[in-house]
Amino acid sequence: MPNTMASVQTPETGSGRIAWFTAGVLTGVLASFLVYLTIVVPDDSALAPIAPTATVEDKAVEETHYTFYEIFPESEVPIIEEYLNDERVRLPERSAYLLQAGSFRNPADADNLRARLLLLGLPVFARDISVEGRTWTRVLVGPLTSAVDLNRAQDMLAEASIESLRLRVTP
Image 1 (tube, helix red, strand yellow):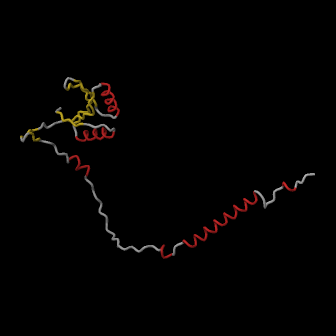
Image 2 (cartoon, one colour):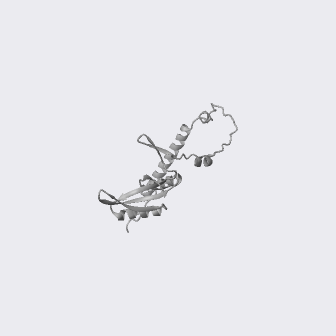
Image 3 (cartoon, rainbow, N blue to C red):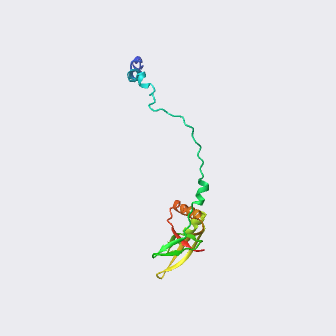
């Protein structure tokens, strides 16, 4: 009959030794952490609140009334005259602006930009011009008659990463 007692594992062998070793290591780490906490804890004087060095005065806060919405529309200064060649030239009372968003040799490229700008909600049109015998298609936004509309259109073009050129026209 073979010896069956030799194949049975006791707690002192195999997996039992690993369990006891792991329990000892964890106990040692916990004990080291507790000792660390008792050494590192600062004194109560270090945790005491710092006394304020400046005195705070309680003053009544005056409510500010902003008249921005009343002042801003009135702050627009119309251009009455322009100086050219040291002569005074009177400009027309009413002027409008166009923003040139692009100029293309290929009309299909102009139509693509025009479609992009129409999707932004801007008034857009294209105009063909001839420069040195070549035909160019300009994409123009406008006409814009107020400074608010002009600034709004320029902001929308800038947000779409499109550079624009401001052109003044008489309506």
